[in-house]
Structures are given as C-alpha cells and as structure tokens.
Length: 360
Image (cartoon, rainbow, N blue to C red):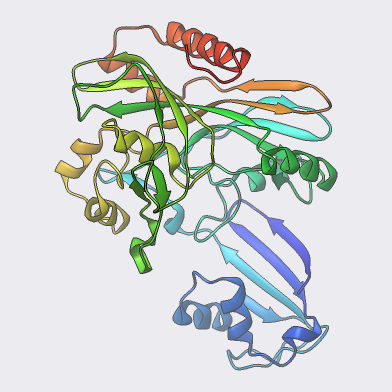
C-alpha cells in the first residue's frame, strides 16, 4: 500500500495511503492494526470513532468493520501524547535537540542527543532525528543510514536523497565503517584491565517480553554468534571507570553486554546493570528510589563519539564531544577536566585508526 503523504506538525503526524489490490476488502480496523502494531484493539476503535482514521473518498464508512477498496485513500492522524515523555524520580526529562557536525547537499552528520529516536518507531513518533530534519530542512524524506538506540547519544549519519542513502548503506553493510563509543561504567571487579578484547558470543534466545535480553557465552562456545569489541580504559576511580569501545561486529546491545560480561556494566543501564526486574520497574513507571540511586544516570552511559566512513572517495572521521549529562557525572566523580578528556579521546581514536585498529 503506497504512502502518498506524510506530514509532521509539532503535535500531529498525518499519513495517507492509497489502497492497492492486495488490501482490497479488508476491514478498516485490520488495516490500522497491520500498520500500527503497537496499538491495541481498543485504541484502534477509539481512533476510528474520533475520525482519526478515515476512508476519505467514502466518509460514510466510519465503522471498524468498514471494508476498504482498491484506490481508496486512507488517512490516519496521530497526535502526540505523554506516552513519548520520560521521567526520572517523578520529574519530566527535558529533551535536547541534535547538533549538526557536518552538512552538504547530500548528507547530514549530527550529534544525536539521548532520548531522540533515529526514526519513528513504536510509540516514539515525534522526537526523532529523521522527523526533526524533515521539518527543519523542509524535505519530504530524510533517510537514516544506520541507527543508534534511543538512549545512546552521538554521531549519526542521515541522507537527504536515496542515492546518498544507498551509497552509504553499502559502506555499513560491507563492514567498511569503523566506530568508536565513549562509555562510563561501574566497576564490579577490582581487576579491570586497561585494555582488552571482548569475544563473548551473543544471542537473545528468550521469548515474549524477555526477548529484549541478550545473553553472552564464552568465546569457545557453540552457542550464540561471534562478537568482538576492543576496550580501552582511560581513567578509573574506586567505583567507576570511563573509556572507549571499538566494536568490530554489530550485534544487538554488543558494547553493553561485553562491558557487563567483563565486570564493567554501564551506569544507567537498567537491563545489564540493574537486571530484568529493575528494567521492567522502570518501564512500568514503578521504579523505587533505590533503583534510581543504583542507576546514577537517567540512561545508559553510551555515546557514539566517532565514526570513520568513506564518503566521496575520501575517508572522513566525524567526532561528537561528550554530552552534557556525561559531563556532569565526570565532573562530579573524576578530577580530569572535561576538555582534557575530549582531547584524550580524539587522540586515542586517531591513533587506533592509524594503527589499523590496534589498541595502544
């Protein structure tokens, strides 16, 4: 079913589809359920009754059971609500806007703030990188080349046209892109190596709600899939450390799981520092004060600090400085000034890339 219109306003997302033969004669509520899998049956019924899902050329068809026909135009309105908000200890978190690192006629490289989705998904449809720049640049479509988790901040590449998107996507798919992440972790062991290679294998074999959990297995195991991350610790205190992670593979939650498996789970990581039950308490809005104290930060402390990619026949490195929430933590628990940390990060990354991905 081709999308013929997509329009965002500050609190309204409007979509229009033209019905193709494969969808002929299905119910209006079934159509909405296919395209918005996070909506319950009752939410779908309410949207139809409020006129937020309509068959435009047949306005008399207003029931969930109304059948859609070939060439019908289906309009769906989605209004922003508080489901997209985040809270910490009862206070609403103020979302930040992204900052541009590089821009030309074809691509845009940004420093994505935490809590901004890469593109619309699930209940997060408005505070998204692609949506933000479609509105700001007045473009019909901004393409996401890769993605960062919603809580993860840092370097994100976007394309302004399909050709640029296809070209850069090819770089990612052929593993020619090198990435570096900055992290802050809690030390659960006193024997943290200054540099190490994590090779624990990974898989998420759980079903249902627990499918979100990624399990790790020894490097010699037959379980899971191969994963590899290089770690470099820059500084540590009695309880915390911070450093760089260079993922060689791209498994789900790879850095977070490898960090946890090696005794340095990321602060703020409700799943791999807190555990599944704590993760669910935060998700359900019933986290205790002890849960908040254990996490220290509102989100997992992971920041995509650098990315190297071949663009227009030239290797380009894009850097994103440590974000404000991480700065607050570093200034509180470490003595090294933040500008020195940024310089140290950049020097280590450039040395790693020049030495053909070898830690020094």
